[in-house]
Image 1 (cartoon, rainbow, N blue to C red):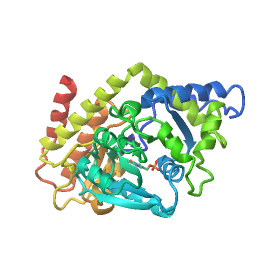
Image 2 (cartoon, protein in one colour; image 1 turned 180 degrees about the horizontal axis):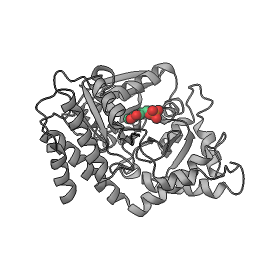
Image 3 (cartoon, rainbow, N blue to C red; image 1 turned 30 degrees about the vertical axis):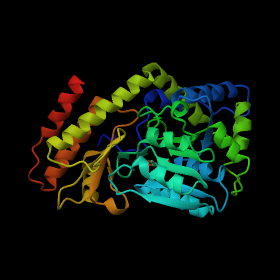
Length: 381
Ligand SMILES: Cc1ncc(COP(=O)(O)O)c(C=O)c1O
């Protein structure tokens, strides 16, 4: 028997409270029994997003939320400024291209955060840009972009909306949608929301709803105005992913009981411990700037293949961490600490990395050194 530990940045572990809630018999989505359940979810999502805006609940992964956030507000030929500092930034451009929206890319060196001045300059140069598309936390590089600073810039542009992929940010660190003025904010169920994959959540501001009135991109499944109308009746446009919404209420109640401040503090503590452990082991963080609190990307030493390391950890020790994507394939490992994570998830993750590296012949590893560094922080922070 190998006991399994899921330490990847999504899907993440689901608390037993939510697993058991989702195992209850299926309820019909148009029944009077289900409507209060959706109403509770709707209201608690507003709490989490710190918004008065509608937060749509879609049966899809996070990418569905991203697709809908392009097709519902923009039209073919419209320009969108895309912050491209990793795999998920690239996804914004790909989605734009798929629907005839013209991406104007700000290419950011991987491992770095975008300079907000570049966004300001681009918007000044071309005021016809309709949207700025960005990641609050770019999971492929483990870098957080400065959403607040960018929101301040976009707010000044009357005809431009800010669309934030907060898929590994919402519920990890403070992202007050209304206070900062984020027009469209997206997250997914399988990250800090502590649920299985299958739901996307999208908040939409009045400014963005106004743009939706003139949007001409093709849309059918992700029709936000229709979703909004249904949400008013505590329903969704198509069949609701009922069991996931039941689980959603459980996790949102857990999050409310913990409180936003405590949730953010927990993520800071776990991220700090993980990063300190990597440094104590003499390993470099991949993020050169603004490391995300959702996960830690560790650069691997010369001669250590990340693919082989993640495979070893998974197959021999039951520990799933993520490898690198695209140009980072084989070069980094990514240890998550978002959602249903606590003290000993970090201890397990670091201990596994130490053992894996030692087993792969990396001689500089001293077993326990990273764990000790993490423990110091976990005990004192
Ligand atoms: C920042 C970010 N954006 C988008 C996605 C895509 O989400 P999904 O796989 O749920 O479609 C992910 C998934 O890891 C992500 O981390």
